[in-house]
Amino acid sequence: MTLKINRENIIKVILLMIVPWLFIVFLAPLYNRPDPQIGGWPFLWWYLFAWVFIQPIITYIVYKFIDKGGKS
Amino acid sequence: MMFTIVDYTIFFVLVGLTVVAGFLGTKWRAPDFSKISEWSIGGMKFGTVIVWFLMGADIYTAYTLVAIPGSAYALGGFILYAVVYGSISYPFLYIVATKFYRIAKRKGYITAGDYVRDRFDSRILSLLISLTGIIAMLPYIALQIVGIRYVLDAMGFPVIPSYIIAYIIVAAFVAVSGLRGPALSSLIKDALIWAVILTIIIALGIKFAGFGPIFSEVGPRHYLIPSNLILGYITLAFASGISWLLFPNLLVGLLGSKGEDIIKKNSVFLPLYQVWLILLAVMGLVALAKNLVPHGVSSLAFPSVISAYFPSYFVVLAFAAIVIGSMVPAGLQSLGAANLITRNIYVDFINRRATERQQVFWGRVSVFIMIIASLIFAITPAASGLIFYLLTFSYAWLLQTLPAIILSMYWYDLDKYSVAAGWAVGTAFVTYGLATVKFSSSLLPWFYNIYVGFIGLVLNLVVMFIVYVIIKALKVKISSKLTPQELM
Image (cartoon, rainbow over all chains, first blue to last red; front, side):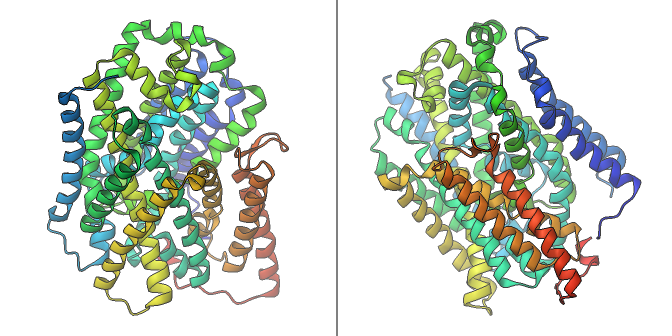
């Protein structure tokens, strides 16, 4: 195996793979619900809309603070 | 709807500008087209902004504009799987695409086939992987072509001659400019689609009080995911979300980047396009709530909503967006496949001493081959009905190349026998599974409605692991032209 098992790689795998897979794929049976609504939007729809923005913020955190983006 | 001379002028100016941009690509940043990488992947020179537009054009096509509202209209909440797989694809690319990019740049690879050939020291395995990619692009391009049919009909153009003229022009600008052509024209394509979608949503959002009433009108039975399809939803979203690196058309965009940092930044900023998908799905719900679609033909959901609420000059803007949104991606898809034909069939099997100039020449010829083959597909009545089936087919097939392209970057002593055996079983299962449902769906009703490609991949990995253990036990000699250091 050429994968370096170190703390940074583990955090990256958690934030870029495990977290999105869990919250927006595998938890589908839990978020597939009409309530609570926001502005008439069912939970299912606004939850996934929110994740369109949440995941890029998480990715940005990885880029900036773990990979020291732009410098390395 | 009747269109005025002004409307036709707007339409032709926008489509014309995109084509001009495609041809101007040949002069952009002084390319040296005696080098294959300059033509095929733009010399790996694009920065964050260009890659953002280019990948946007690659991923969000006319098919997206038509299919997402159509599926939201017909299927309801299930279509959100498309939002989900996009959202998990970008962070995954952050990890795997940067690694592939690093290896490709170090070794001068242009296609996934190039990598597989060296990684496993096997031209045959590379050929299998490359053929999967080439075959997958055919129905994809054909789908872009038939996607503009409604627009052609509505504007009174003859369908088949228009297809031929439009896509031969696409083949011409891609052949002339290489990746630079679609890259430059993608600026117009994405800007126009952003403008069209945001205008529609703001106007309709005001009209329908933020869409709350629309959701109540269609009701939870329609806007939620049906509980019997939830496993299908999860497996389809997951399997699609880990497959983007395997698409030849997406790979050309990624390899066009100037550096790894560009790919990382884009996995932060590209997800902004996902907003389109949610808004387009809401448009499908509007079409249903207001009963706008003639005869319930779901593919007409998007044009029906626009025609119902907007003046004709805006309708032609949306129509131009559909046409451009099909031409630019078709260019990238034909380029992705042409690179495979050139590098992994022509160079590896026909002319092993091919010069860079010969490769550029055959790349250009291959673009025409791909476009003409797709046109034949789209035009032949017997074949055009098959396009949608072939597409489900080819996505599930492409997924079976995941161990060869992605796993092999991390698992150094993975050998060609294990990968080939897994690939064969996965591909055979996918083909069989789809045959059992007569290619009508990619979810298997006889297996909890799970996505056929996902089951194929699980079988693929199981077989791969069993063969791997046997190969280890027998101490079969394995070889690779890449050292572990070169895979870092």
